[in-house]
Image 1: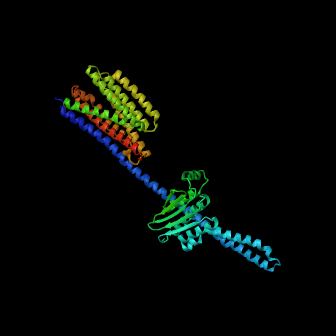
Image 2: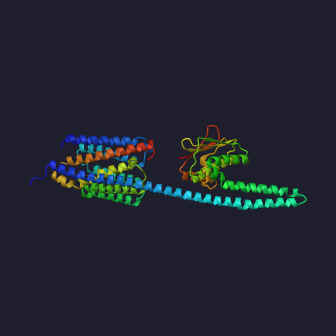
Image 3: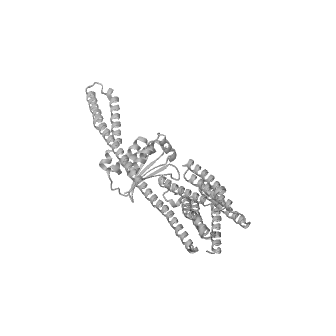
Length: 262
Length: 219
């Protein structure tokens, strides 16, 4: 019986080898497609986790604000009211006394205390924000900081801000409050500028001509638990889905820009 | 199959092997260990080809240097996979490499003394296929990169898998082919060389990806 020809042998080898190659290629293709699917699922999971974290953060911030609102209300209505009653009492007592000037010092102290309670209450929950909106609240914030720190704080408005969700406005206000507070406390600035621009999208900018700061050092401080300001700002920015840019102007100082998508 | 075609394919394969070695030398210090080892493997390949040609010309038996190359091929690739698997399965890979080494020497000296060492080659091919699958499995678990094609080791592994799948089939039927073709193994070696060319081209893609990663390291 004649054996297979060279052509037949070559054909057998070719078919067998091609079959093995196809098997190997199938393994590789399966691996590539499956890996892509796994990556997509991982990305989906990450997005879900991020959304969950944002919701958790938003809930935490909301409960924090509710607590602030409650404390501000108690301070204003209860302690503020009581202090005002005491002041009326002292005034009445002073009228009945022979030397009413002896009580002047107590009245001044009481006035200061009433002023402090009002200020703390307003810091905790800015009524201007709820009544007149973000622009007015920021303007008032600048005036108040200027009055207490004696640093000129300019407020600029570009474009016409139409207003947004009050919860978001409150978050933006808190971020601006923290930034201005930081500039007043740490920058050794001679002037601070706060501006709000709503031409394309909402942008809040806090700029000062102080000593500036190193972002990495601030982050390291934050990690060691010393500086929570930046951490709070970044958390709030994340809840807003906004962008926070730290810029260093050419001369000196710092410039922080918050861009909020419309 | 003519001798001219066979020689042409063999020369092309040698040229590609030299090219792989040269490419692996670009940015050598910055290259991954896997790429350096692949360069070493192809250097060994070129040396063994030259050695085989010289020994052949002298009319001596080429079985020992050929098996020597197969053993070093397996051992170097074991190191490549050991590195790619980030030191995992250390005991397993070391034990397998040691056992394979002993088995290959025993096969060369005691069993397939003067024949093609098909037991050694098919065992090595089978083990390397398993290593490739193990590497892919780890890739699926760890998901180290979003784009697999940017991983040089993915290309190396694909090259090794494709080459060894073909080689496993060829070597399993080698004794049948020896009988049928009356010791004229030109077809066998031509298929072997074609598979080697495919492997080398895929390794070249891997080395090129490694270069890309060195120049722009975002995966």
